[in-house]
Image 1 (spheres, helix red, strand yellow):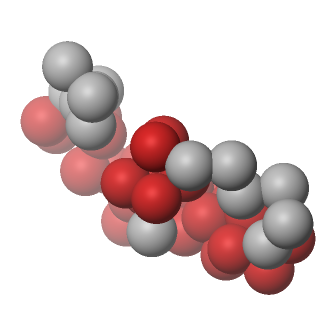
Image 2 (cartoon, rainbow, N blue to C red):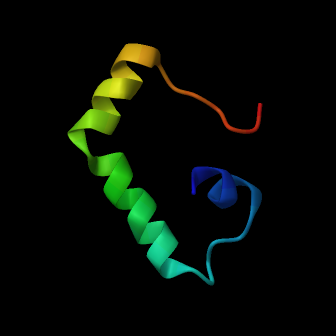
Length: 43
């Protein structure tokens, strides 16, 4: 999903945007970023 959000226009897909917001709000996601650092899908 994140790859699609980076490469494409997700405005026509509000549910995808909400899904990504839900994932990014999860404690496990935040812990993973703390441990591994930020990442970039396009670079």
